[in-house]
Image 1 (cartoon, rainbow over the protein chains, first blue to last red):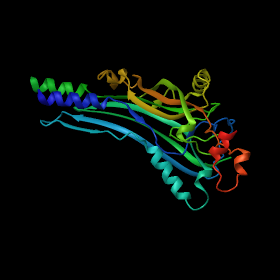
Image 2: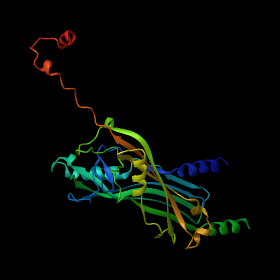
Image 3: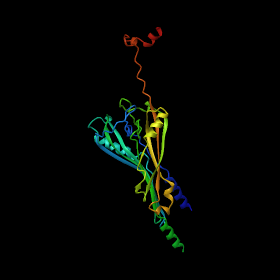
Image 4: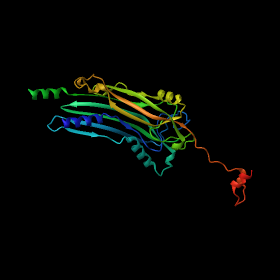
Amino acid sequence: MKRIGMLLVLGLSACHPIAARSAAPYPILLGPVDRIGGKPSPATGVADVKFDGETQNDFLLCVNTLAPTVSATQPSGDGGMQAHSQQSFAKLAGERPLASYNARLEDISAGAYVWFLAGCYEHKWWSGGDGHLEVMR
Amino acid sequence: MRKLFAVALLALSTGCAGGRTWITAPTANYPVSISEGMRGPDGALLSAREMQVVGHFTSEHTGWNLLYSSIPLTPHKNISEEINAQIAAVQGDGIVRLSTSSKPCALDYFVILTIIPFWPGCADVDLKGDIIRYSPASPPMAPPASAQSLPSGTAAGALTLKN
């Protein structure tokens, strides 16, 4: 009974959605406007340094043996996009002032799925994005 | 009999369902950042003091897929109009700290039905962010002309009092 309770608690905690949020001091833009009061204009992509990143949560439960196994991952929620964009900035370090670059996302992907098979149950949910650095106009 | 029931239950507990979507904002009229960072009209990075939070952006969507989540029915979701409307409503200038969260939706948990290839799978995607208004830091007060030409050693306060 205790074990079932523990599994339920773990399962419910895994249902909590992840939130990918970045604490980076530079903008990681979505959309065509790169500053307050700016006009929409197509991304330049001149720097051509691409980045991607994903933050995902995973909950796996298998009860097909005498000893049920459970695993869950709970990332911090900072988001992989920030880490990847920082790596991209690091690649450019020394070439020109990094303040003259913007990080821009093409889109943000988000999703979740659930599967059941032979006594195992997994659900996974994630968000992430692909982007590039571009020289500020 | 009990064993047979358990095996049957395991065999029936098979399936897969889910969804994903790609959020875009190609016609947003305001800057949107998923980080804390934002640039001002001159392109300089803004300090937290220059960004006044005047509202919260929220947007909820469901991504739909078929065939064990392999065929996307809603591959792209353009949130430009929501961005433009919600920022305009509070007379804001942009969005910072846009965060994305996702979770499986209820249809994904219909265990036996999810074995059917055309059972729709889905994912609920929520977006949240802070709508900010640019409030430029006031420039440093220029000293009065009289104070600029004060002879060295003169107390500016004393001069003001005399006036």
